[in-house]
Image (cartoon, rainbow, N blue to C red; front, side, top):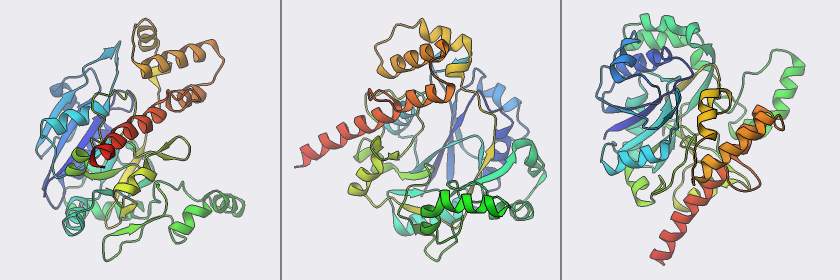
Length: 352
């Protein structure tokens, strides 16, 4: 079995974050994986790696976003995944992730064993939240062995990091009460813990959908045309998307496969990073986009949101929310659900 990790290199967070991810991949105890880099910067492959302290010691391919407006890209992960599938460049299972995430060094080994035994269509990845930014743990690059890497994570208490769905629990009694009130449903599902406990089977079934980092079987993606043939999905990550009344793909997935299973033997860690929404905050990008004549619905929606944000009628947060979900049904999450349902219903009608 071979795994493929599709790693987005974005122009906002800083290339140095990629060092930690590469280091965790170089130290993996099993090497049955490859990497596809999705470069969203203006840098070439050689320029990206020239800025890094760590070089990849594994098989990889490097692709660059085709469309830029000013210094920033119009990225489209759905189309990119579709092309990888059509070119037969994905392993038996694949995972899409960001450059600010990194692995336990035995992640590939342990998740491969679980997938070999289970043959799940989808296995959620066990993403954990850390309190550190890249500079706070950059000394991890000095670690030279898998065992020492794990010892470092234990010493920095990262092995105790909460699952992605939970923020850190405050120390004060008042803060703890607020935390319990805000997270009581999740805590019930997690059996009053904030992280998944390793089990004999290597996974745990939960009732809720708490993260969008997952391994998907290549055959499942092909069978159900999961990556939207003929559709563009700009600025949308590869979400399973389970938002009641908006994007209930999770509900639809339960009709196809049992997907709410969370891997629990190893973790993926998320490093804190700066946020800069260039699609609203960079004048070069926004000026170019507003000047663009397009029939693409998502770009028209973004243009409308930019105009409202520039006019001061909505906040940055509201503008972002509008591009993802709005009453007109033209946000990425609205269309994510609509387009997937068109594909699934067409398939069901052919099979009936």
